[in-house]
Length: 248
Image (cartoon, rainbow, N blue to C red):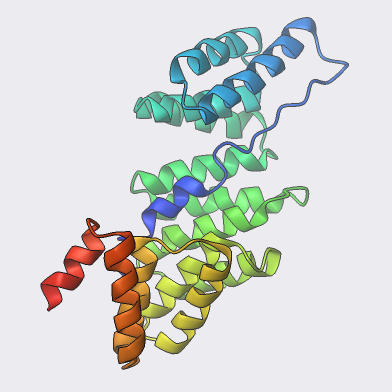
């Protein structure tokens, strides 16, 4: 199975959902660390890596045994392309708190992005073992995307069905299912999932290109013409439009 157009989904899947509550029974350092983690995550979301580093380094110094701190610090190090440090802190977070679903999900996504797809699955499953994990659709979709990269279509499809059971309009799962079915040459069902995706997410160059290829397989010439026009108008400089032109 081709991985193009799939791998990037992982970047959407929950890296910055962590929320660190300030517990009234914590020590002064632990409370200060929790506040600095919240601030650091905020700066990460703004892509202000310099101040994020300042806050998260301080948080780590204040509470070096906190799984959420190591999880957030790992995200920072991955953004800085310090991959060995990122892995150390992702793994440390999962060791400090085996029930921390966000840390497990994030470490699994990290492993998948770095070519360790099969190893990543156990961390997504660990996240899903926590009944209090509120965004289970992320872990299911991440697991599916990783397995799609290594041609494990059947279990990937099962994970995507579970993701959509958790949240029926979850866009990353819908587009992943459309791509999976397209690769499996089930074009009619691929179209159904792609249409559902376009109800909840704005079409992009890659999804319009997928729509065009499905229409070509279904011999829907009128639909192809309309979709190509949209691709040419909205994304004239895209690789997808160049691919269409090369086909002509």
